[in-house]
Image (cartoon, rainbow, N blue to C red; front, top):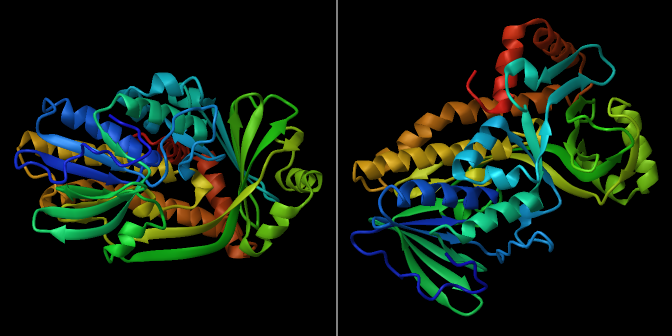
Length: 422
């Protein structure tokens, strides 16, 4: 496997008749995770003779944790990994390295500012080591890229797909790098190039968008008191505030604000903004000492109207980009990757063409319920917990009280959050 600065010279322009070529366009967290899953489960199962895998990424793929990773997915943000996602990474062989850089969540505390009622979910109540884990994206990227080095995956980076044309048995791709342009044939093309996917657009795949008119302010916060591995989700009338435990007694802040106030929050004096955060969040996590560098991201629900065609799968944020309120976006995408891998592995055992529409529809049929439930829950939380509307305030209070008073309902909620079967 090569992680390179220019397009690989030895990648065949066309897959041979007896070898199916899988091309993954997009080398972020989802694209690399899928490449590793396919390399382990398809190539090893078939003696490396039946398939080839190529990963195309427009940014350089350097794996050094000491320098800023160029791929935008691996930036200053943090991701919440469910227990289910941890199990997938464990099966993949990455978890031993990830354990060194993740911070476990032993307790989740959910509350609503100005109202009674809260929900506390503890790992010990569900016989798991942790409800979930928090990892800084730069560390996750470094681990994934280091594992990619030893995987049997052809990496073209930095390189970009400039043209994508459907053919009878796949797709013809023009791939442009700094030094040349080459043509690739993909028996199965997997689009994983993000919420604003240029490939998805070029293929004429429409999307449905719900603009929440909100932005997420992201920063790390230094805490005066130990966080005790508690994750907090605090709902307010403007939007939720999440504090997720990090190493060195820090917390990853996700502060949802009205879109028209984004500049104000980014440009505000740090001490003044820290006090505003303290006032809105309260003292459940103790005193907040220092606010790190801030970034802001507009929030819109994006859903692709098509996720599969013959010889084509759209996955990750290109398929569904979620609001971060429940921290489920990457976890859902990873479950999609895992299910897709299993369907392709099953097809390979049956000697089926991996791009066959019936094969890809089997994958989608298996994941549609998970996708629909996760998207609906996330979207409902946003709309229910980001308003002063009296009727919605009553509904969300009833919801919190129901979870508090009903062990069965609370268990279903907790299992969904952990990404495991109820």
